[in-house]
Image (cartoon, rainbow over all chains, first blue to last red; front, side):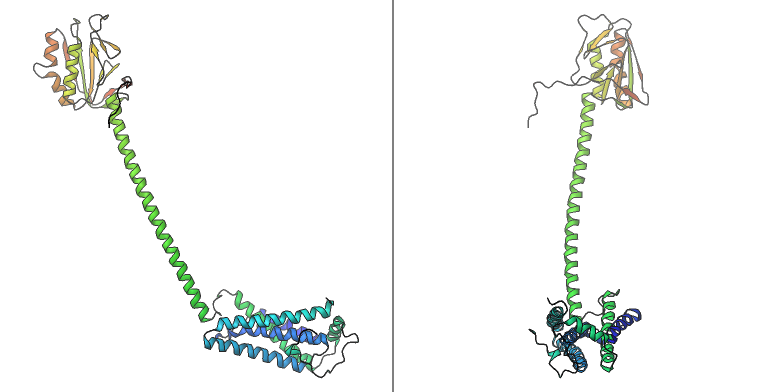
Amino acid sequence: MIALLGLLVGIGAGLFLDPSVPVALQPYLPIAVVAALDATFGALRALLDGIFDEKVFVISFVSNVLVAALIVYLGDQLGVGSQLSTGVVVVLGIRIFSNAAAIRRHLFHA
Amino acid sequence: MPDTDPDTDPVPERRPAPEHPGDGRAALVAALRRPPGRGQVVAGVLLALLGFAAAVQVNVVNSDTPYAGARRDDLVQLLQTLAAAQDRASREFQELQDTQEALQESTDQRATALEEAQRQLDALRILAGVVGVTGPGVVITINDPDGSVGAATLLNAIEELRDAGAEAIEVDDTARVVAQTPLSDGADLTDGELLVGSRTVTAPYVLEAIGAPETLSEAVVFPGGLTDEVETLGGTVSVDTPDEVRITSLAPEADDDFVEPST
């Protein structure tokens, strides 16, 4: 319940405060959001599997974001930033889909 | 479970699974009803971060400066694409401009040709006497009380006028004189009547001619000219040079049953 509230509060704060993103962070923000989404879906699936652990959630959340940002940074340094970003988004998207499928099986038995 | 997920690696289960392990809805409801704890607060903070970042990113993407967050490579590529598009557009513009110039030129040529053709048409219509004309000229009245002025005298008068550059000639406001117009005394006409073309004219004969007034009147009154000739026959000639001579009668359309242009 608190997690759900936190999500809503975060969205509201982001929409109403409308802060400007520092230039240095601009390439990483979208990838970080997708990585965090992946971690969140994984956590929801674990919750439904009955094996949710907030420590694992926190670590996977933070590490997902950091690794995604690192990959993008590396890609930018190597001159393949946009391609690598696309690759990361594709991989994370596939994982989000498979997690969503598991969640769907849990909730709807289908 | 068909999928293995590194984020959900099996960990020691702290909470007992729901009584029916397959019942996800019950697990979800149980999770929502769980009393607040440290873990929930941490998860809430992380999710708040996620929501915040997502909302900010959405704002950035939807903002008025959509390229603010784009990376340099993408911007360079975008710039190149735009430059290529501009090249294409300007080439197309150039082609269209050329086409417009060509069309304009051909329109001008057509207009010039049309103007020239119209000018020739006007000249030919005046020559053929199928159009009313007006301009400076002379009005020559031949009084013939004795009825002794014949077609030959009138023809002489007309020839003198033509020689003096008359551009259009008319007799008695009814008979237009053009190249094909015949003059005759008429077999069944009385004295004082002449046949000009298909029209009968009666004395006094009034010749109207358009041309240079001085030259035309000179052509009539010179010694041994029309005036003397008519006076010898017992008539009189008067010459008037009004500012504007109006010729309204028309010659019949020329027949061209036999003649054809040769190239």
